[in-house]
Image (cartoon, rainbow, N blue to C red; front, side, top):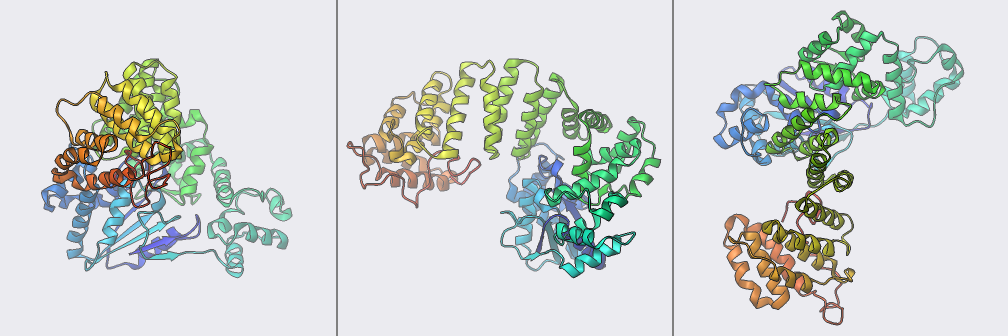
Length: 573
């Protein structure tokens, strides 16, 4: 297993291509992260596994079902990510019996989260199988951490000069030559691309080479100049390809036909060396795709997305069609907003929380009715928060609170804002906000009110002396006085036990917690909760305003009690 890490344009993709050429005895499976597909759960993994799906029925039933749901081949609850990864490992192992297998994953930094976790887990569990996996990435993220790494660095001055001279069509002024080498910083792609698109006068005198732009920006600008010089039909064809990262030529040509683009435009596009249309649509570098898309005007992008939506089969791929319609819409459109809302539900069912959040955000933006828009913005804000996009959640929450909402939605908004406050600053803002929200929820939703009381209790314990307006005993007394659940859930027993322990002493909280701990499925989660409750009980502020042991924060070995308290998307307790 190997992770090839390096800056954009340093040659990671070229190394993967060379690896594929020399692996003559291997069956090669490939995929690549795409910036535009990060919101689609398991999108890259589906492309990687597509040639192997004829063997899906050979998998154990739980793995087969999980993979089928993840890839949208069957309906069902959101699959466990670990089971999905085991299913992929099973498929690859089955193939490797017949022939050694090599998996190549390019642009791993742009993989959707589900694909990234699954492929990394497979890499860590390969022992005796005849399987190799190579990842190429700009940054080694958490999922690829502690895998063997190969860092690809920049070229030295001599090699950089040799490469630049090999692509020049005419001798270059020595000063300009040195300036290009210095600005490229030994980056091979920059050395090849920076001289292109410049006039003879610019190359002769060194004009038009902005020293203040970043390397990525300069490379993108070079690509943009080359595309801008193409005929309109060719530019539109390349924009179609840039607007849908699936790499399927059939979809691209359907959309091109809708826009009246002749097939002859492909030859002109390929002659630039920036894109190929067979066997799959592939750009020379991801920066080409982003450069083309960003350079297009809003009207151009909308027309292309509309054509792609029309070219997408609504029965086979309704989610992608809805996504393109959402990108094509300029003004609010309730039909498109409703489709995106349904698309978010399907994405969440497959475990794509980040995807669901993105679709809900776009749905809210396209909603016509102010009250419906506020409600969708609230749901989108909650999804963004759970996907760890806290800043986006705040923006959407502001949008929701600016529209008409009923009492229940207002209470939900208060809970979310309090949780965001706790997640972002861990200070004294969260406890009173959560307590107020819990009280507002009492006549509206008792179960949610009790969950919010539990959050408020945890936030007050965590804040310690930082909270000058509220101490844990106040929250505990309010929780004990709140309406009880008719059929107590584990969370209700936990709340009763901890509130009693904090408000009335350790002995009174034992029985409810013991009842809760008899649920074997939730025992692990309870242990960390009880650690928090038991540890912080010793740190409760005395009547004088100081802690029993002079502590102003919970012991370092204890975890915060608040739901998602460790981080906005924590699920460890």
